[in-house]
Amino acid sequence: MKLIDLAKVIRSKNAGPTTLTLDILFNDEAGYQRALNSPSLQPQAIAPLYGLKPEQVELIPYAPAMAIKISMDRKVVAGNPGDRDVYGAQQHGPLLEIEI
Image (cartoon, rainbow, N blue to C red; front, side, top):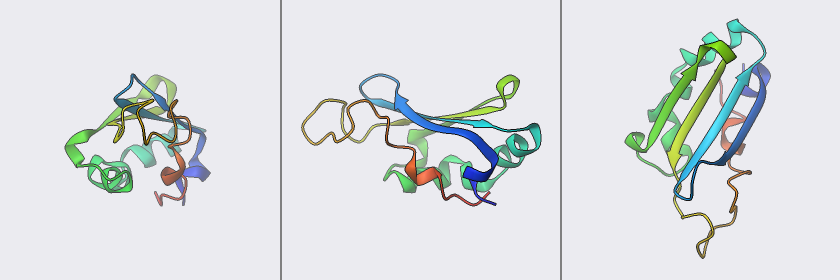
């Protein structure tokens, strides 16, 4: 099953000029637990999707909201030359097809 089938929201945004966050909110507890325990959402699996090292990716579960936040370094500081998404709002795409 793909992540997009389990989550009701998958979005990205800046968390400052050098950090990007990916928010995943789930439809139900079963989907949240399945994703949380999946190797596909661990830093070792997410980092290559964004050209980063695993230590640059942090997974932050938040059970009361059935949500997972993934925080990572931006490759280009927001607003610098070469930045194609100054708000970080279009960076969640690689997550959509992840198999959980």
